Length: 478
Image (tube, rainbow, N blue to C red; front, side, top):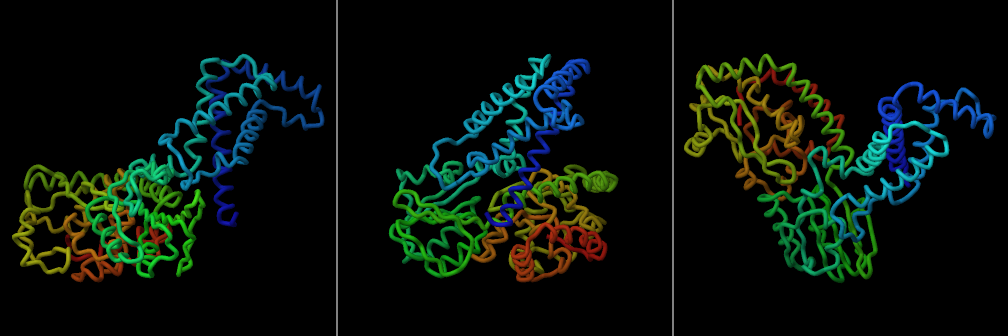
């Protein structure tokens, strides 16, 4: 185990250990014992056993809470020592698409161990109904934090909602029973020779991603020995999950991190270059949720003012919902305060000849669609405040490339499609450096720079620099 993996392992171990112990003591004091006298009787039982069996232990440790911590800690330590709990291999075969079997295994292990421990340490006079509920609490915590899959589900990124496209994978292939595939929905299956049609494979992936959300790419090729350079470089930079299957070992031209499994006669190579996935994604979502909620509270007076102003100028609706493209091509409705006249977006095509920006960017001098005297709403980005709702929902992040319209993906080339592989954001490098640029190439450079250098610390830096950049802005809009 590498040092980095060891650190992650220990952090998860101590987090689960502290969480389960805290919940156990909290639940025990409030529900399992009916009154303090019952807890004192349990303590007397422990003192009696201490005098008889282990008087060498300091008496100060002989408390009910200490034995509860001991019971839970031993179970968690033993569970973490097993591969069953600590390692979920997505490259193994499975026909089970739910978590019930794993939960029941942990539940029966914990229940048997808990009842035996309570009997040995003479935990008497406990509430039987509350005890039954308690048998579920620890297993629920353990299954939630077993790996990032269920936590991602809580934060809106369930593997059950992810999709994949495959190449040369037969409908009746036993490889479709890989855990990696059974938990995801296939949206396309194509037949291309990897050696002869690598450019067609690249175009197919991009074409599908422009219309659908794609999270995983699976390429199966009998007797494949190596990938063409163009295809290998593309897949590495794709920022998605990729699985390569061959009946021969594959030699790669570039050095990168991947996992390898041998399954029968098949060699399976898997790498996940989805930079916003797992624990980093969870932390990013936690930051987004906390800061967007705080932002709502702080900006509430401004929100009421803007709502009232728009209503006075042009009535309802106050908000507009626009179709945008998000993470991995996911379509969503983006909220904005309406700073333009009703149905202004319909007029965009009619005014396209007056557009001052190139590519998918759209901006007019003295835009006739704007509400009278509402320039300040755009100037200080007040129209974007409702996107905090999108952040709370998980469609957007506080920081990331700006989400564009669905039709704008037609302008994306193979390299620029990478901007769809991170959460779109309310602010980003573009907003703090070149917010008013008329050059789509500048957007591209900032977006790719953000993707190549993404980190949680970079997000925080951009957030702190956003407010000063907003106060310095000129009129802007997209």
